[in-house]
Amino acid sequence: MSQSKRLERPFLIWLFFHLMEFIPYYIGSLLALYLLHRTQSKIPLMAKELGDLIMSKQMDKIHFMDFILVALGIIIFRTLSRLLFFYPARIQQLNLRTEILEKLEETHPDSYQKVSFRKARRNSS
Image (cartoon, rainbow, N blue to C red; front, side):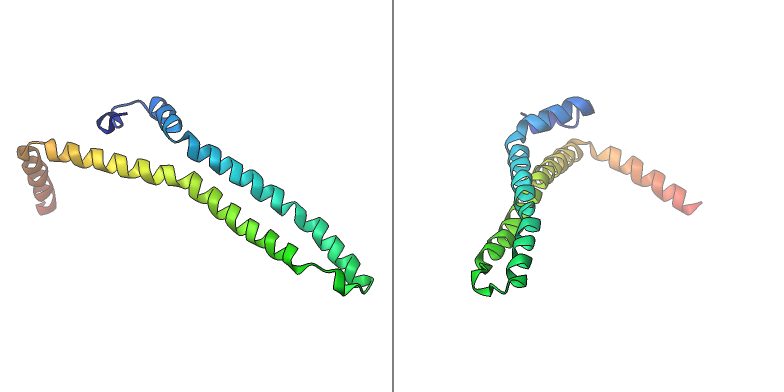
């Protein structure tokens, strides 16, 4: 899709094209979010099992690596879901800024003089 037409589109059409352009990122984000919630749902059961093992004084059966893996999974999936969800907005922001800059560069210099003259006139009164 041509960058120079992004600003000229109505908002809902722009939003549709944005979604179609970045759909893999949003699907990845939703998948990472699902995996995050799935990983976090294991915490209550693990805490119950840990409490049971401590109460029955079976400390040798505690697997600390399970807790480390769950914590690592939470960190990875949370970070991944945020990155994948917000990255398209950063790219879109860059595209829109570039298009605005291109439009400003195409503007005739007399337009700038008129604007700066009006501003100077308002400031002097």
